[in-house]
Length: 193
Image (cartoon, rainbow, N blue to C red; front, side):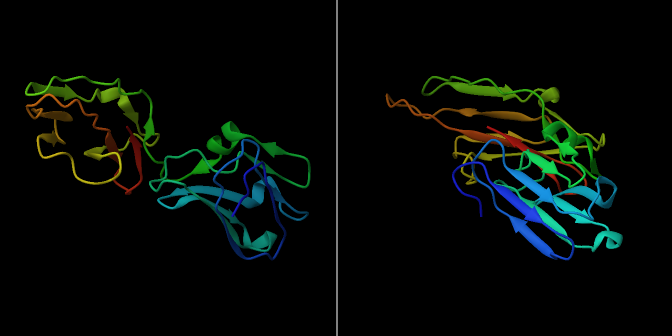
């Protein structure tokens, strides 16, 4: 588990299977020791985070860069991967080295919506809100941002990506934070509120 600042995680040949839980910092690093080259490392997105696998010829093993939110579409919690030969992968290079199924990415933000008490509400989540790097068909779901069910007055049509309902009457102003999730055929997903 990382600290509050930027951390350096050392991994050497033969270190086995490790998990990194990094929650803060902007320049956290995974540093591979001698004997592990860029060609020995494979990156795959999983629901639990970014799986870094070391080839058997370099001692085997793995490092899971655990996601702070599950799904697979999150930016890795470690911002740099360094190799003993001097090569450094930044976030963009890390992303470009990911193989296999990739999680849907949030490509556009959803603007805040306002509805008056007792008034009908309808909002269609734009088709371009998510993109799947593998061009997989996406399925959609909505929940309260904390993962609980939508408020009873609000429903979501996953086929049309439409939130609709009638806000409860009354004079109390309230705020509802909604999470929209797009899931690919492999079970990886991206989410935005």
